[in-house]
Length: 640
Image (spheres, rainbow, N blue to C red):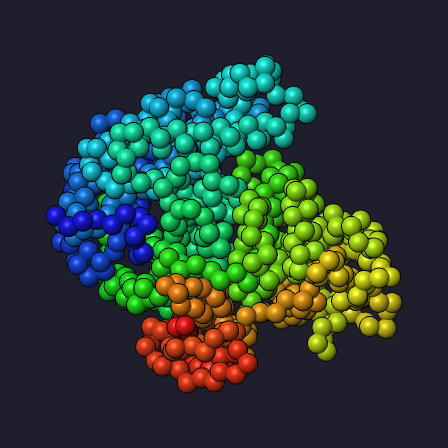
């Protein structure tokens, strides 16, 4: 029997599920081993995730401890395990966690309860006996009886709800001594529920690990943008499935939120988009593009396709084989590479959890601010990471630029850390009126009345760029004016100062009172991209590389095995247009001229995976080379 890779050594995977419903019948009626054998032989994934239990709570295998789907006629999970084991492919369960309809039909007392006393019909209480009596026994069954390698637990942090069940209130009383949740306890009770969820996940992982130490578990979207906090729960890997539409705009953000932690990570692309109840298969070109946006940052990549009750779609195997080949050609180049620090957008945990009614307020205003700033910086071809508050506790000085998006309630210690970073020579952009208010008293700056959801026009490089957002006028006699604007699209109006730069210690601080909000996805423009670039330059940031020829090249400066690897991803195409579901043409970009700072003359400059030795010049510590065209993804590899 072949050895199966652990998750840290896995690069390309496939995910299948079908969430067996109440009316599901015929599971295992025809066990199509031949198609699974062909899948493993041709695609050669490192791992497969297959269905064991969806949100409806019906298990798709003949479980002895849970609730099997009705009319089951065969054991498809046993077939999956036997075939994957024969090919040395790891097998993980797609298994729904917090969300379990069937469990609540049998045990309504396990339900999370809303504030009005109504039990939820889908979401279990993380304070109740569900995990001990159902979830943990099933995971042990999967590990010990079926020999699976791990589980990808779905329906977790994004599904959990604020719980007023007797289990939750009893735990609240033990914690606080209070019989009820008073209005003034709202924030504390939200955090109590968050900790309850963390304890629930840690509890089932620890207990399963006691019985099966090598069984690897991820809680879907834990420690990503959904939960931008320091890892305290012993998940074995970090993973999530990003949106099936406009996927490139999401994957480039989620990859940067998942990376840089002490766990292996991957992201899952949907292999199709959904229009109503119609699945539209994504074309290979757009799947190549999505894969590139993830693997270019050092992570693993997997693709999700619907699972059939007895196998998978045989017609799709040639496509999956080609997608796997695209990824494998880049595995040695990309997998496990680490970023060379350039710029980072700061994701404040305190602000994320402030003023919310949800336990984990994913995709909210804070996320949109972080996403817009990150995407604009990337469109300026600045290699950009996203750093959560706890990731900035040390080594801030390695970043040439930090950007704090608009946030009203960042951690006080974060503000002090950022100020110290500037004084020690850093370049900091504080962007948005709410964020500026936290810094205005620290320099000679006064902020006028905030204009909420109001038009503002910015004169940028010979054209006027309009935006409807929150903004405020700024006044300073010692700062350097960076940007003025107008309330109307008419520069004969009185100009309004909107951004200033200040020298502070050895560094530069730029304060811009224009919020970007979700503008990248709703009001995207070249003008706003250029505005973000103006702010970065005003802060004194000098990038380690420049690209001339197209703004549609996303660049990620990475390092692996002592080599510098500048990843270039083609971001063109119609992925942002929701009218397009399957995109079979990504226009090539080029010619491109790339200049990269390199203190010592390089031993070689190669374009990979093409294996092409690039002609280059080396002068004053700068490598300059040209690319005729960029198809989807290539890497300039500099050996020193």
